Length: 223
Image 1 (cartoon, rainbow, N blue to C red):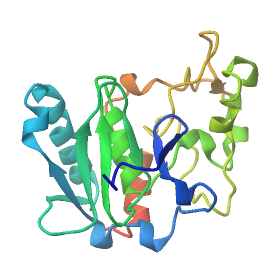
Image 2 (spheres, rainbow, N blue to C red; image 1 turned 30 degrees about the horizontal axis):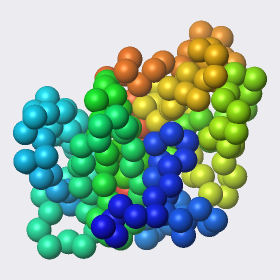
Image 3 (tube, rainbow, N blue to C red; image 1 turned 135 degrees about the horizontal axis):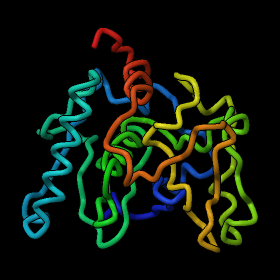
């Protein structure tokens, strides 16, 4: 039960423990997976009625392995590992390695590149819309955001958000552009002519810049 207690969710799908709410826990060496190896666990019986979702999880891990040096290995006796867990509705994950079993919840809404999005959280990445340089590229439409959900659109401090590439509109790490909308209108839009922010359901997988970011974070540019 300790794996699942004291969880809070920010920005729609990032799980944080109570102890992490008041401190920066990102981009520390302890948050990375040693040697870019991520042990994982899948309890087959939990997925027997959702074989297509299990297929998508396995396909997504292969997709990430094919382009980066990250390797997913079935868990043996590791204390820190990801466990793919079915959820009735939501898709959510911790950011980075937390040093104990950590669920990645996969629900029916995890379509398109959403599974890759959640795994990238576990690899160590936050959302693209909170990048410190975001104001040059996107506009947050505050009037369209549900009251008291504005906190989900706060810009990160440059000290606790490392960017490895130029701003990337194709990144799978964007929230849905209609996330937390109170009126069916977008909550953020592109400022750059000719660029638009697509829904995760429209994206098929990692962008070129996502691949570069993973390989840079894990110092595996030989891939």
